[in-house]
Length: 116
Image (cartoon, rainbow, N blue to C red; front, top):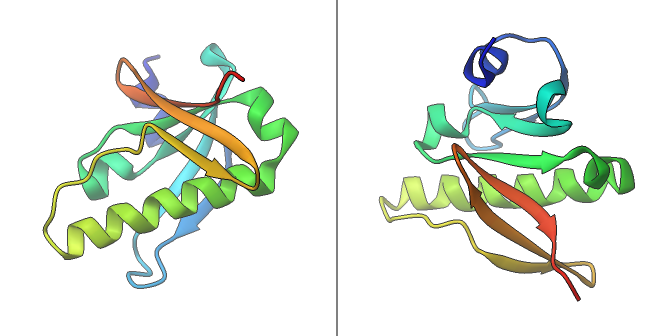
């Protein structure tokens, strides 16, 4: 089974983030056992951007913070779409005194904590 197939079913969904302004637009966060990671499902569909891959240990450390990060990224994607401007994933950003990076990883962008 490919990861694309895994993303299209509902198995492994741990959370869903819905767009406040467009209630039918929801992005799921799913567990990918073969990658020991979580991945968004819906960013490609709604925004034609790469899905976000989140290593399982980051979710285990702070589920709430990871949800906040994904929500903030989705808000930026939605604003760019509304304004018909281009969107680029921010490669480095800070959330509550921790620096995170997003790096290209094949069909995904991978979230990680920046090396100090």
